[in-house]
Every structure is written in C-alpha cells, then in structure tokens.
Length: 394
Image (tube, rainbow, N blue to C red; front, top):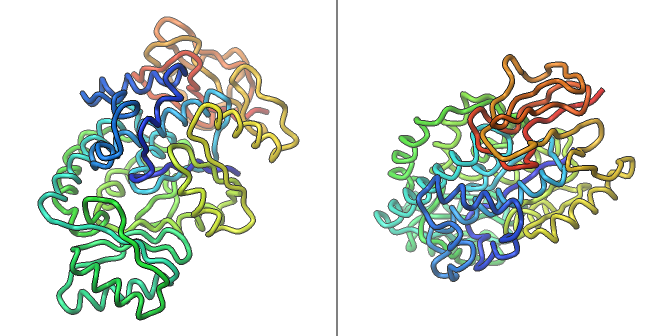
C-alpha cells in the first residue's frame, strides 16, 4: 500500500516552478491565481529566498507546487491508498483525497498564510529544533520553563530524536538549556517568523475558522492521516474541526507515520518541493520504501521506481493505469465536470457506463468493476487527461 505525503512551509525554494512551465499540470498555477487574486506564477518562478520565506508566500507557493506534482503523478496513472501532509501539507492531502477541490484549497491556504502572518506580527515568536532527545523529555523541558512563567511548547514531533519547540525567543533559550541538561545533542533555530502550532496562533485560528465555515467539505476517497491526532479520517464532517485545531496544536508526524504503517502502508511517496518528509519516514518507519518527486523528471523516475517495487504490474497505458486491480478514468477534454446521477462509492460499473460529463463531452469507463471514488467534484474545472474517477476492476 502506498501513501502520498505533502510537505509544509520551509520546503520552498526559489524558481521551484521553472521545470513545470511547459507541463500540462502548470494549468493549476493559473487556476490558483484566479482563485486567490495572487500572482502565483511569479512566486514559483521569480521570487527570491527572502520573499518566499514570508509565511503568506511560502504557504501558497508550497501548496500549489505540491498540487502540480500531484497532478502530474495522477496523469502518469499513479494513485495512493492513503494520504497525509505536514502542517500546511494537510491541505494538499485533503485536495488529493477529494475533501475539497483545488481552487478551494488555494483560497484556504492563502487565508491561512495571511492569518498566520498577522498573528506572528501581533505576538513575536519563533521555533527551534531539538535533536537527539526523546519527545517526552523535550516536553518536560518546555513544562519546566512554563512553570517559571515562560511561554514555550512542543510544536512538531517529527521523527525519533527530532522535535521542534515554539514560543517566545526568551523562553526558547531557557527551554534549549533545559533540553541540553536532559541530554539533547543540539538545539538549532528554525527560519520562521512565528510560533506556529502553539497558542500564539489563536487569532489566526479565529480568522481561519471564518473561512472554513464557508466550505462544503466532502468525504475523502482514501483515508487521511491527520496532524492533530495521528488518526485516519474520511468523514466530511470532521475536516473543519481538524483544520481549525491544527493551528494551535502540535503536529504529531512521528505518530502519524506509525498509524499509516500499521494500516498497511509500505511505500511513502513525498510529492512537492524538498525531501524533508522522506528523511523523516526513513528514520521513523522500518521496512518501508521512501520516494519523492518535485520535478517532471523526478515524476518519470518515480513511475519507473514504483514499477520495480510492483513487479507484477503491466506498464502504464494511456494515462489510465493504477496499481494492482485499480484504474483511473481520465477526462476527455478540458471543462467543468458533472458526475452522473446516483454515483456512489462501491457502485458497480460496466465498461462503457457513463460516469459524468466534462462540458458536452461524455466521460465513460473503459473498465468493468466498482467505483472507489470520484477524483473531481461537481462543478470543478478539470484539464484534459486529468483523472476524474477511481475504479477497482473485476
């Protein structure tokens, strides 16, 4: 079983969109610009490191690039049994799972980034990475400082011996000393402008809640392992509360990886800039394969590598191959997608059955089997060859 994972803020880098300019998946960049009113192409092509470091720029750029990579991987016919994303990456994961469409995700990410930047200006905070110390002992160090009136909390439990703490600069210094007294090997500053995933983000949470309240969420087509509780979720009614809680709650990434592995995931594929999550998975979960892709060439290499990990598979054909007895049905044209009436997960499908329409073009299945889920929502604008349905074949 394979999980797609999506990176969070900090993985961005200048010109990371350049390899994608002539790829069909670049259409998502234009769509993100229309949805947010931002020049997303400029962020991905022209922004320097300092401009990209700003929270509202880093989050939108990372989200859109991750979705471009995901779209290219889907076009190559690769699907996942599970998804997850680190902090901001959870929005990418929810789009990948069909909980809301890409344009909605872009708008939410833009609002989230702006809200977190504003909250960081209201209360000065920062973050530090604590290396070589157990999570429990790091938490104890933070509690010791809080007992003396300082404001510092465990923010990310990323991997064994890799924990991030956040709070006021003064409290972070005290917590670093307390962590070293307990055996930490190093404490390093993180290049961010706020104390994310702590109570310092309370005002951002309030602003984000207003945006989340406008979204019509859908059930996920695959399980999503979430940051706040490291559990698997699929129900539409859960996303609003989980995304709201995430801003002020620690990211339990180490536990989340364990949850995915316990549910059968043996391949972790990071989609988006950087390979930070790939390194975390290598350190955390034994007996698994870890892969990543951030450019078109790396997507091609990813498909070839996955073929070697699944030797019984036939080569991808016409963009509609998926692993084992699963297939993707792709859009015949660009336009607005409308699913056929009464389609539901588990619905039996015969080859030739109508699954929906893109504009005036019919979307018909080439396979016989069962509908596992729709990958595009009613009213979503899709591109030619974009996967719109996921089937398990008989």
